[in-house]
Image (cartoon, rainbow, N blue to C red; front, side, top):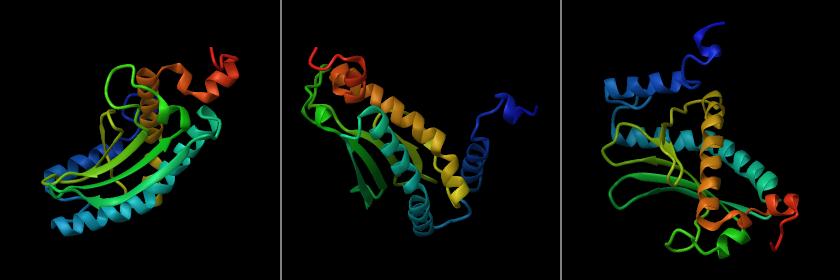
Length: 181
């Protein structure tokens, strides 16, 4: 068994090394000028978007009993010159929940692709869950991101439970018989 299958290296080692190549060469997947990098990011999102939607749809079905809605916020330039695309999963219980930790309600689950102004290349994150390389130039690259998207969605769901309590998860309350408890 080699290191890649024995757990000795990150499962997305190719993405990490390509990310490091970008930093070393001050490019993004070979693109140099910022305009070319943004266009490559735009194409990456076209390939990557269906993966995110699939994972969010599956979470909606399994965890929220299909009560949620997936909303996509297209790639948009930010005031500081960066670019962001975002996918959100919201559902009725989350929308009306009071944030037990303080703040303004409980936000939707989010998967965010962002390319900050002045950065070499884009990244992938949740609203709070780390930042990962977004190295997508092919369908195979996009599909390889699924493990990270699943981790982001799980972390985001847990954060919403932390903020809104266990009752905001209809799949759990129905299965446990704890509705209204």
